[in-house]
Amino acid sequence: NRLLLSLNAQQISEAQTQPQTLRDFIDTARQHGVAVELLLGESSWIEPAHRPKLVGIINSLRGVEFAGINLDIEPDQIYKKQPLNESQYNAWMDTLRAAAEASPWPTSVSIHPRYFRDPPYMSWNTPQRLRQAGVSEAVLMIYSSNPQKVADIARPIVNNADGLRFRVAQSVEPELQPQLSYAHRSPQDFQKSMEQLQALLATQPNTDGVVVQAWNDLMSMGYENQIR
Image (cartoon, rainbow, N blue to C red; front, side, top):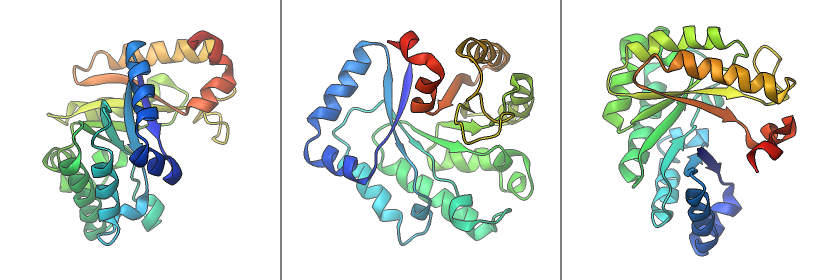
């Protein structure tokens, strides 16, 4: 019931100059009970010199009625080393804030669980920083094909983050190892695992289910007939 739509540079340009095709797609999806969110994810936007590019894209698409925006901006892709130092962490949070302030849609982030549970991030209070930045939801990237393990990782994070809502990201990408992805499992096995995970997450009042990465890989598993 929710689709995170990623656009490359050419598609963003087309949406800026000829937005009606995208608007028609969003309207059709809405008629079928599917909310479409804009997914943006370029790590270079963390740097102050490149941050205006992100804000500019958001401003140029303000007339498109997305249901939300998801910022999949991962600091690992630009800094290459964990843990981040405080200056790098602050630059990331400043970028999220700038995007959320520009966005006419509710803002969510895709984020690794380490930023809620590991030092030094616990002392930097990531939940509070996200709320202050204007982020309303965090999508926890917990890639594991063991629903109980995923729930065990998510539960303490969710319990200690008042004011944020959460979803959990799961993978069906074939390039990941089997313990991280459902790519080589049957649709029936995947469905059963997702139902189990949804049930485990449902005990937490501030969770909203599962996000699956990615659409083409899901279709390759045989889900196409079920969805259509």
